[in-house]
View 1 (cartoon, rainbow, N blue to C red):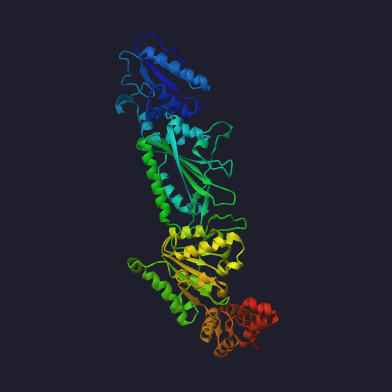
View 2 (tube, rainbow, N blue to C red):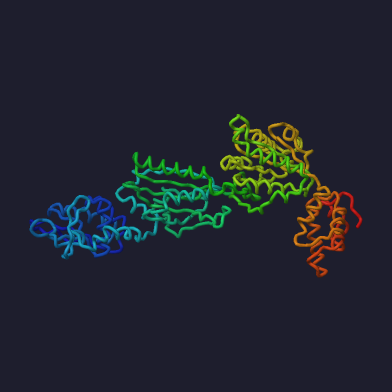
Length: 583
């Protein structure tokens, strides 16, 4: 550091660029020692980067000497090579209009009013002050998160910051990400990915502000593609740090994953602001908007969903699977016409009447039981309902996922109107004496309570399926308000078998005599049996070199394999008739 001249004239203090001293330290030094505002400090540091030095200010000799002494002590204490210098100014004690007030170069300078101060500034520094300033901010490199935070909150002690966090369900990750992008990703001062050193340790602002061996390192941002059933997935960030400014408020936003082994990975959002009413109100506005985005749940609304499970499931979801089911039209539902009309009346007509029912004080929740032998089209009927309720979100719950029924019901209420499908309901709602242990008893009670509307009367349509209605507990099968309508899906009659043969025949031509033979031979079989029979008959037609039409021999070959060659177990597995029909 150069000594301050002893002349009576004022002294001009310079700061020199060395490309080694950390940027946050330089900014903090200019603010705390020389009383610069953050914007002035950043502009001076940017000018030093560009020109090799910049003018900190002009002071009386004694003041300049004292300021340099304090600054030098701080630089020496930190061990940085930052250099400061001074030189006298002539005459008036201020820089002439022919010198730049930032870099001090004796070049023609324009007179500008910056932050209420008259200052001569050259064109290059003026450019750095305005349009070039943001580039200087964005190009500053940091190795660790604590360096970036110190740079961003320069002049604000750590004990003058406060953080607030919210944790959101992991299955709503896509909606949280979209809200985060809208709120903070449009024009942040800086954004950083953070290296996640410990997988099951949630990142926090306090951890990022820590230096030493445990310092969190800056790293490439890591994203995961989350399927929401649309053409493109939502790119969801694993963790990231936004440094932003709103008006005069500097703040930081940290997004991280909250993980527990075997449990759902939640999404944690933490906002750090200076202590005070402005920061508190800003934080509350941000979280209100985030929560609103989750509650609107646009990503999954109106789609067919289920929670992803696993053998180590411990009662929380790991993620959402979006099912892309092929649409099913009414003509593809091969059931007796009376059955289809009953189904339409209890589902589609009921849904259309919901608004009026609600105004009359009637419940808008309904329970339907689809029962019948295996392979008679219960799952196919579910697809028909889901295809024709476009504004409803469909949740498909299998028997092994009943442990997370509460999570499914929470999601159903969030995404209502919803169609909740519980497949093989007899496995969880059979007679109480068959239920093993208090856990299963609790699951049964939970299902009954949800269906009975004890918690909430929501726009939720329950559809339960079973192959064994006789095993359902009487409280579920017989009490109105839990099951409002039982609908049988019977084995196909003669008309139904004819339709099924035409439906599953695909592009094959089936002659009248072959069709009559097929209808006769399939009495008492399921729809699933007919579907497999037509596939095997098609394979036989290909084998004989004719893939355009179906012969009686093709049909007999298929029936022989299905009804006789494989034995009684094969007949049962395929949904065949109880009594074999001799070809």
